[in-house]
Image (cartoon, helix red, strand yellow):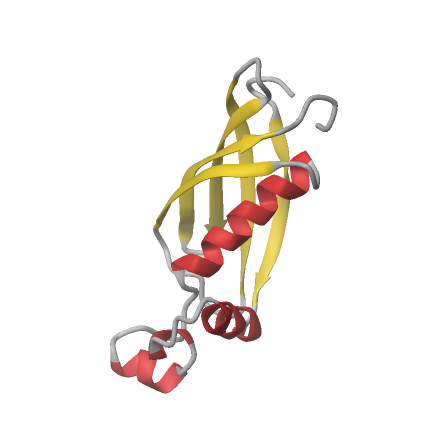
Length: 131
């Protein structure tokens, strides 16, 4: 682990099932996350992913890189362009800070065909010898 190290890209197919399952799993029953017709009535071209699903995908991305002993300490994200069904989100990340205790800060970006869906930073602790 070193500052400037880039995480491998992760492509995630944004399916209707992923959007709906993520919303239901996070108990987000807003119709714009599961009913295309109601989403259109509210001005969206289709259903779109909620922030809790995105947050989970960002966390998964970081822990997949650092391994099963990694502990997420903080996930701070901001949404941009919506994730609609049929698109692909590509997550990328860079280690931007590292301390002697094995805690890293990772800058993460998730982009889709419309632009940046998510940007943020993740703080993760990795026990010595695990990364």
